[in-house]
Length: 157
Image (cartoon, rainbow, N blue to C red):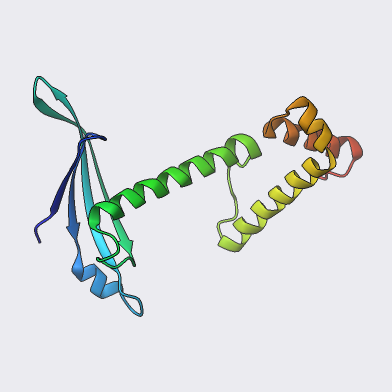
């Protein structure tokens, strides 16, 4: 199948997007899907010549129909999703000490995150005035919370 070729001048990326109808037919059970192989090549222009610097290849599957989203829109959605995931996990790692999750079941991950958020917001609620007056960072609040827990003897471990 012939690829759709897109040149994103702003991002300086050239893309080849191949639709994979066989995969869509094989995977589609109840909901119609579309699947793609996307090859992106970043480039620099020097003296009017295009020099490729990096190549990425990835696959994606979507339930968006063709009349709702063309292939370039889907490629952009995938990139936006990566940004959200990367920034979200970075924030959890940097500010909530979520360095490694030892439980990989979705329910366990959700429960652990909910416990962290409940603990964080419970502490904020109890210390709103202090938080506001001293402009404490999330990291500092968690350190205070852990210190408070250790001093009171409520932490076991």
